[in-house]
Length: 395
Image (cartoon, rainbow, N blue to C red; front, side, top):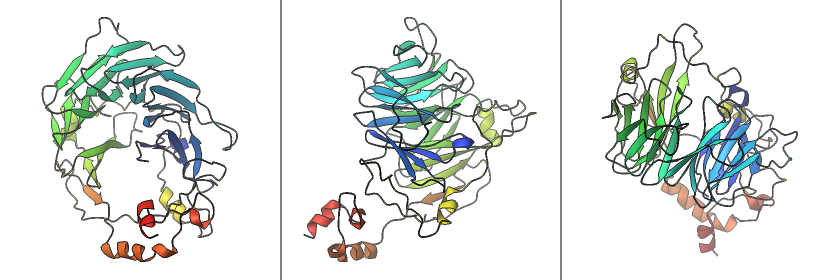
């Protein structure tokens, strides 16, 4: 199945955990070398494909999922043993409207928001299965929502109707009006609040390759553009370092992008860009709600340090569902040409590309068809070495 989303746990105390989707299933990965099974759990309550996942910003073990089946499930991964089947702690449903996004509030641990077609629903897990409010936000489908890091009530939404809107989530739904509107020239796939200042980063769905940064106070036109892409961007995340100084904000920021051309880029954010969205370094950084002390850890090095007799990264044997036949080998990342640029350049500081399989390796794989087997999850035959179509063509 195509992976809809992958998210690393943001809390240092749970930094070994990763979530990934596989259709209606949610896979919980544990990269710790002491873990007996790196796919520690497979959570399944949705009956249609999962569209979004979100770790809780202040409780490491809590997360939320939403799916095409209209359901939103809240989960708590804490249990005595990994063999214990975890069920959702709460289920929320918009009924007959597929869910596209789910996001926890940064300031209130009980509040979350979900998007369903043209609507945004705001929930409080203490209030049961009835939403606090329903916002009729756009004229077309919504594919991105993002809570503000500065205000508990502010949330932004984006849609294929080419607009990005900021709302007061606690306002009266019968009289609610957007606090601000950004009018773009393209359908907007994602729009997220910046981790610094007051601004928005817009990601086009089609019609444009560059990413636009807008100031919330002056939304008429972009204050900065990240361009130079040859393919459409499929995902972008922020990398943050620092924040421990109590006298001023010493954080540093990088934008990381991944595009359809399989190119990973790192974009430096300098003081000139920060000033465009009213970032003030003289004010101490907001208090982080993440639990644990952040340390630099490379799980790749830890896994490579294991002996060859160590258990491979694979699904737990007690699970009879997806991934019984998966065996993942460490991959070597090909590093394309890297150019070091001055901080503040409009180009990425470096980029990496995904290697393409050579023709010789493909021919080698075809010559070995007679020695390859395909199984249903038991023994050596369970290792998927070729795709089914190629395998059948050799019979």
